[in-house]
Length: 163
Image 1 (tube, rainbow, N blue to C red):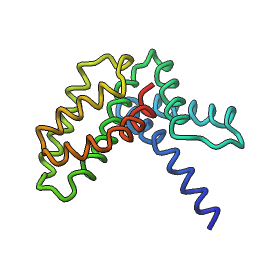
Image 2 (image 1 turned 90 degrees about the vertical axis):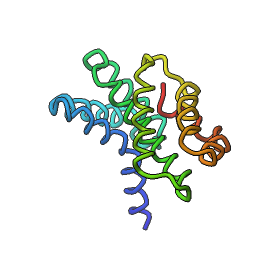
Image 3 (image 1 turned 180 degrees about the vertical axis):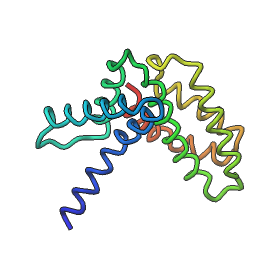
């Protein structure tokens, strides 16, 4: 059982790296393989025998993305990671509410548009959360209240994604 738990933990930690690879691969498969190799090599060389946190993984990915081809893929990756996080929150918070997938999809589309108004390097957890609050308020008042109740936890989650 311990080996299965270790493998599950390793796979869970690697998820952001695989998402990064898929995002870059949509534009250039060679760049995707190169970035994947850079991340894995860095982890192998610097974290052997150590536990990695989600923050460590995000930092490794973001640094690789920012330095590779002058950050060409960084905004795509960051937007995707934030959308994945927000989609998970809203789906959970609205699970017993009359909120349709169409409404959730529209909120996520509006979220993406809202993100595009910011310079990716100047984004903060508070700015992102303020955008989520604004969009959630228009979606459902109870979901909005639930979001506010979880604000501290959600801000901590955002801080692991945003440098």
